[in-house]
Amino acid sequence: MLHNLTGWHALIVLAIIILVFGAAKLPALAKSLGQSMRILKDEASDPRGDDKKDNDKKDNSKTADQSANPHGAVTDPIAQRHS
Image (cartoon, rainbow, N blue to C red; front, side, top):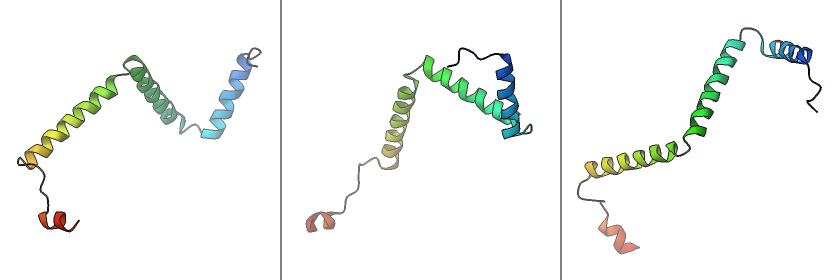
């Protein structure tokens, strides 16, 4: 399907993109595409990085919860008797 594409086809596609998005929006579009490619490359090179970040966030939330109330969770004894 794509075996017969030439340089002229690429120029026509580029012209259509310019007409659709406008010349003013192309730099922002290219910047966001570059950022997306960089993120994709980083994620592909380190697939376990998110798990490590998530675990760090969980550990930080546990310490924050413990520092807010060092004696543990507060429960309502009246509500426990009625349930």
